[in-house]
Amino acid sequence: MAAPASASWQPQEEGLKEICGLLEHQISHSSSADKSQIWQQLQHYSQIPDFNNYLVFILTRTKGKSVEIRQAAGLLLKNNLRNAYKSMTMAYQQFIKSELLPCIGAADRHIRSTVGTIISVIVQIGGISEWPELLQALVTCLDSNDLNHMEGAMDALSKVCITSNDL
Image (tube, rainbow, N blue to C red; front, side, top):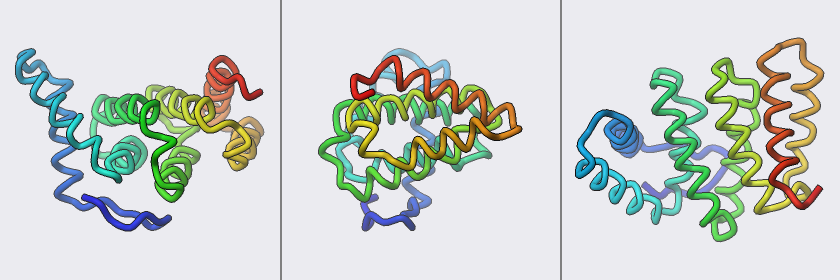
């Protein structure tokens, strides 16, 4: 799965299909034994350096996947970032941040909410000063005439204010 980190990072199709399949089985009505095995596989993948890039890609770019799968990828990403964000390469951190910003105003409220939650975790861990593009993106969304952008920005801002000691 690992590839050089850069702004042009792209997932390998096979890895993307495999992770989406695991997430789909995780949220399906599988037995608890199956879910435990799937969880172990996902935990194993979390040791791969660019796994979180796959998760943010699924959340933000796989419009053909169900909202549930995309949201599951986002929630797993949020949990992984709590434990691994500081040890990630700067390039992977930047990739994740750059993928999240355009989705602040996503059409689906569940995706917007998940993006806002992940943004708050990143700010909580890295501080607002480490992400100067975020404030500009939030202001742009708040100035928008698009209700999704305004709601997404308010949701993200609210979560950042609640979880951050940096403000």
